Length: 262
Ligand SMILES: NC(=O)c1ccc[n+]([C@@H]2O[C@H](COP(=O)([O-])OP(=O)(O)OC[C@H]3O[C@@H](n4cnc5c(N)ncnc54)[C@H](O)[C@@H]3O)[C@@H](O)[C@H]2O)c1
Image 1 (cartoon, rainbow, N blue to C red):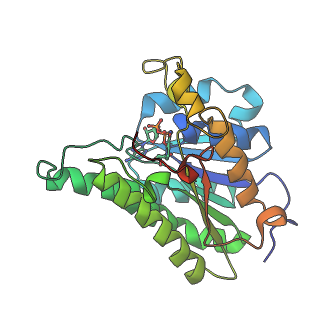
Image 2: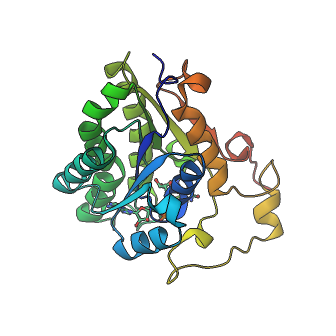
C-alpha cells in the first residue's frame, strides 16, 4: 500500500482546523504543498485563518463551518471538499472540546458528559465514516489527535480522558477494518502551547514558568509544529508505510517521568 506515486498537491481535511493545533497542522501542510480543507465550529476563527494566508495559499484552502458531532455538517463538508478538490488523501481528526477540566463525578451532568464524548470521540467516527470512500480511492491516511490523558489523569477529567482513550481504541480498530486501503494512526500530544494560535479575540502570549519548562525532560512545552511534523510523517507512506493502528506519544517525555511524593 503506497501513495508515494500520487501527484502533488494532495488534499487533507482537518477538523478543528481554524485554531490551535489544527491551525498549526493546516499551515504546516500548506507550507508543504498540500491543499487543505479546514472544518471548524468557529466561523470567525475560520475567516481569520483564511485571511492570514497569502493569495497563493488561500487558493489551496477551503474553510467549512460546522459541528463535527453533527452528521449532516461533516458529511456535507467532506462531499464539498471532494467536489472542489477532486480527491481526499488525508483526514486529521483534531476537533475537540480541548479543556479537560470538568466538575467532579457527582456533579458532572449527563449532558456535559455526552457533549464531550459526542464531539471528541463521536466526531472522529463521523468524519472517518464519511471520508473513507474518498480515502480508499487514494490509499490515504487518517491521523487522530488523542492525548496523553488517554493514559494518565488529573482529577475531574473523566469525559475528556474517556474520549481520548476511546480514540486510541478506535484507531487500532479502524486500522484493522480499513486494512490494505487506509492507514490509521494517532498522536497523543502532551502539553502543546496554543494560546498564540487562537483567533485575535482569544489570542494571548505564552508565558511559561521555569517549572513549566523544567518539568519536561526535553526542557520545555511543545508547539503545534512539533505535532504537525509528526502528522506529515504519518501521512507520508514513504516514511510511515509500515505503521498503522499506532498511537505516538509526543509529550517531551512527561509520561515517562516517575513522580514520588516529597
Ligand atoms: N494543546 C494541548 O496541550 C493538547 C494536548 C493534548 C491533546 N490536545 C488535542 O489537540 C486537539 C486540538 O486542541 P487545541 O489545544 O488546539 O484546542 P483549541 O481549542 O485551540 O482548538 C480546537 C479547535 O476545534 C474547534 N472545535 C471545537 N469543537 C468543535 C466542534 N464540535 N466541531 C468542529 N470544530 C470544533 C475549535 O473551535 C477550535 O478551533 C484536540 O483534540 C485536543 O484534545 C491538545
